[in-house]
Amino acid sequence: MHSARFNFMRQTLAQGWLIILTVLASACTVPMINTDQYQYVKTTEQASNGPVVELQRLASDALNQQQYDLSINYLQRAIKLEPRNAHSWHYLAKTYWHIQSFSQCLDMIERSYSYSQVNDDLDSSNNELKTQCLAG
Image (cartoon, rainbow, N blue to C red):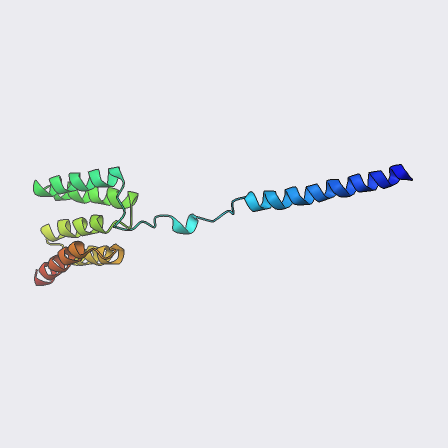
């Protein structure tokens, strides 16, 4: 009888420890968060990744050399890497303005507006470019 009572107490104690360990383990686990919804959610204020900045620089160089198709190509590649980069859309609008494709220019300006995050300089540049497109 003494041994049955001892086994019962040992079993109860083991179950108690198991419950405590389970509670502690569940408190230490990190909840899984579905981050798929945040894919490509970058703001203009965040630093762009290196390849996008390099493609923007190459596009600017091509634009300065009046190589408009090359500039468009670089900017389309930059946009594929970072679709919500308002600056890439603005530079693409600027390139379309240079080739007098004003409707595409206006479309790209609207995209730039939609992705800009309180960037007064960019918004100001977009406003100037929009005025020029509408006058053209």
